[in-house]
Image (cartoon, rainbow, N blue to C red; front, side, top):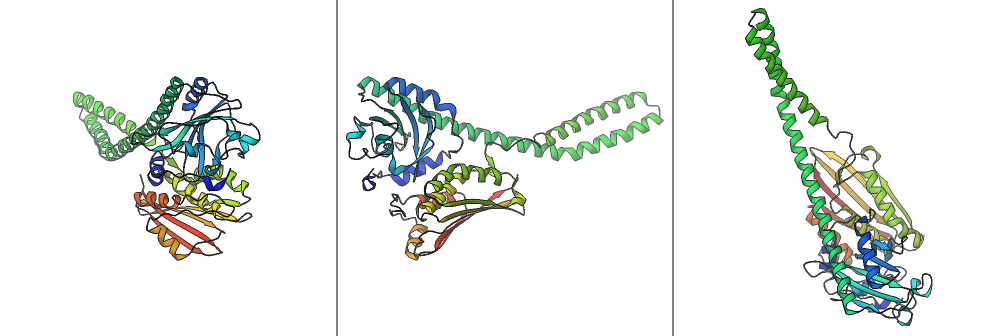
Length: 402
């Protein structure tokens, strides 16, 4: 595919902000969309259907029918980058006869696709975050009725994305309620323990004075107090050995997800990609909010501007200090570097488009998104770079300990 034809939506910055708000973990693809992908293929009469989400650098296949081995593709090599430019749909009757796509690997080689039809995945605000597309090795044509049905399926994809996000937020709120319950249980343990102790003393005195009725009453208090104390202990110990919550990572899990997502990109460009962590605190949980979006954009940017056989190193560190966690993320590359003017432009939130080291399309919005997300989390973002030497991105985020 010719690299100079890649389109960029006029609202690209708002578009990637909108996608980032869903905070999607692309390493854990949802099965909730399998039926919709299957339905789209049946409606269109095609062999393949894909649910694709498109960020700054990459098209992520969130669900598929007819093709199980696609997870990601460079955005500039996709047909769906044209679909997100449209309000209604984008159709290519014959991919092999279209100058934009005839050299695409999936067109001129296996699976030798000929037909493409895509409907944008549009949010309630009118922003296209991806596409629902169908493909076939044979030429096809969609009737107006089928097109409307495919639009309905695409709308349902967005509805489910919103529902999944709402469910995650609800789980987070429930976790916060559970934490509150544990704190309440902790706070009542002392008073109740005192009541139990007092009841035990009075029970002994009552026995010496032969106050049978008083003793029976106090014994009941003692038993009731003991029951409440045991309940408090049960609440406090509940979940100590449970796995991470749905809104949490630890350094080990964070490392695993980054490697799963970005090792394919590094292998494709022959880049030495490493993720290193502070093993001392590798099991301590922290909130994962927007971390994959932040770090992923930095990694993709680093790989884009690093020559083949270069290096991209990610360092993750978690420190505990006076009731809060301090998470440090450092992404360092041996790439072409940038001058002070470019760094200033990024830090001021301005965007520009620059080609990578082997002609990758530069969309210029990835670092703007990182700065926006870090600011929204009240963290710090710094860039250190030397032309011809490489660049280091450093982020510090603070989280209150539960």
